[in-house]
Length: 380
Image 1 (spheres, rainbow, N blue to C red):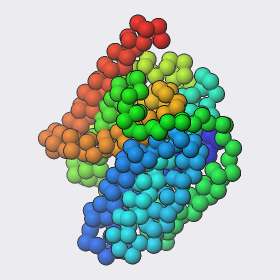
Image 2 (cartoon, rainbow, N blue to C red):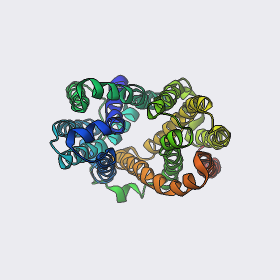
Image 3 (cartoon, rainbow, N blue to C red):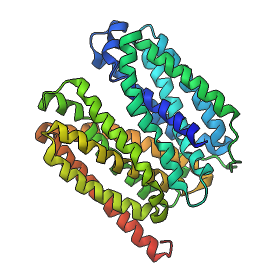
Image 4 (cartoon, rainbow, N blue to C red):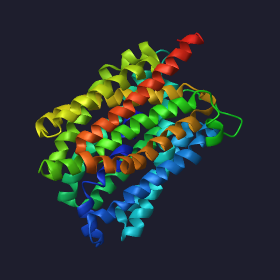
């Protein structure tokens, strides 16, 4: 079950990451002026994810996360197939938008199923293994996509993803997940926002996501514009990050022992210090590659803790709550792009690291307050 959910994440993550490295090929194939126009489809994909996670993910509370995931996989498969046969940009935009709608339903359902199948006291370990699917997409998906596009064309990338989704759907349909509690009442983003503790938990998601994307978004521009490196050399940065993200699964059992509040205090504190250290080495490509590994480790732990924290709040509204998580995370992508742009233009990547360090400090402060309140109430 864990491997199945991990592969689901891997294929979903691959689609969200592959468009950038093959954008030039897609632009040529569709007859558009430049690769930047192709990335409009990526923006539409992100909007589809955010809106779907907000309004459609709560459906899992009524029908169960398993059925919701099957519906989502059908939408993703259709969207990827349409992307592969797209005759023009409008079709690619439509295909990626449909894929985004499916992903917005799929991710909350996958996280919910991970929480359901996890043995008592091993929730973070199981969630961490499932999240390793993002490593598969970063290390394997992005690297393979560029080579496949060069050898057989960009459409083959989407055809292979579509085929993979069909296989995953068939396996998910026949899988037997534990009986899941369903909610008799209709859940929604508004009911999810009334769950005690959700706003502080979402604040952690915003701090983690905005800090990450504030750096990651401008990493490529720093590489080519400031370091004079080739675009292809970004692959080593992604590989190093992905390996660190995957290696962090060795630390996941520790998270089950310390709990989300104490764990987030430690991880956010470590991120704040690490970002400050990394800002000193932005002029060295070799050191930056090494820095990516440690960043991957810490980001994995932070993502695990924020997702686990939300999944434990209210099992009867887990679909709606996890939908809010995905929405907030994808909104952070847009927020980081705009907030960090003047930071990058004014002080380069080093300034972005310091900005992310400040956000990590805010995340640590929230975790400290949450832990103090929990101790006062006898919960920690």
